Length: 201
Image (cartoon, rainbow, N blue to C red; front, side):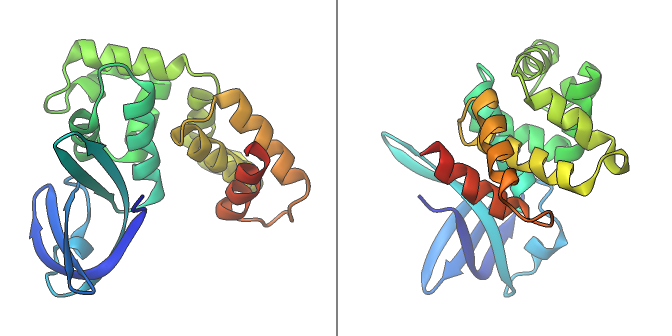
């Protein structure tokens, strides 16, 4: 699995980048909201990726950060009828934070307003994500920002990362809670995530 690329940006188009990594050109499908850094041809860039393999094609999807990749994985794995194309439309239409806020508040209009989504798909997305125990609750806490301790915010991020990887919400919460017990109070999301993953194996 290709989890990230670091190389020279040789082509930059809406929804598509080509990155030269030691002489190999990787075509990557990306959302529109990649930011200015990914428009500078000739510059070194790093982006997170997810490879989807189908019978007749291998497609590499790219993301500017972990929030976007986690959301993409959550959408394609946990919402019926949502595939990579729709998930990319969502990431192009709303930032990860705004999308989470829309799900928590039930703001169907914001999601339905994304090109290619529509009201029925928006309703299904909100319903199915709210139905996943732990997802909406963690997002709701995230939207409150400064009202929660930093340690709790880090735990929530680790839980959401595990859920996006396909673990059941209840298992993810238990694994992160156990990982946090033996971790220093300033442990990063990556530290908690690695410890939790070891506990789930």
